[in-house]
Length: 120
Image (cartoon, rainbow, N blue to C red; front, side, top):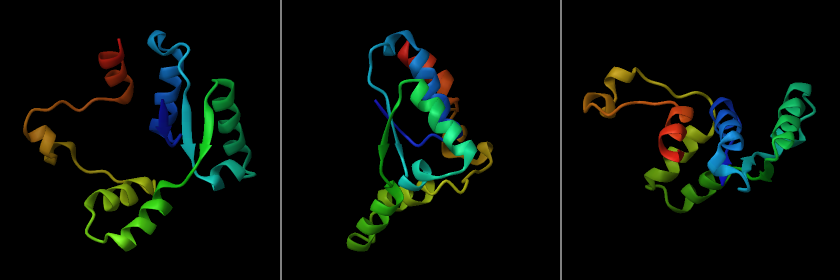
């Protein structure tokens, strides 16, 4: 299994998966930007060490850069636009009560709760 990024959400998903009984023996990897891995920032290095200690394999790549290059060839591709906006990690949020899902009674959940409900 591969998780895209190890920010707040990605790290918690990885932590949960490494502890989940249905995932024992599974190969877990995380896609990280090369700049994140080569950073000399001590806190970033500590995060990388924690991932390695959990047995998570680090894969280098940059979804945003790849999507931006692809968007030049296909400027109307909505999926690529979505990947760029959310992949940049600048924070995209909105009021839950105004979302399409909430207005239709579709429950919002955390990654940990989703994993418990769907991987049990």
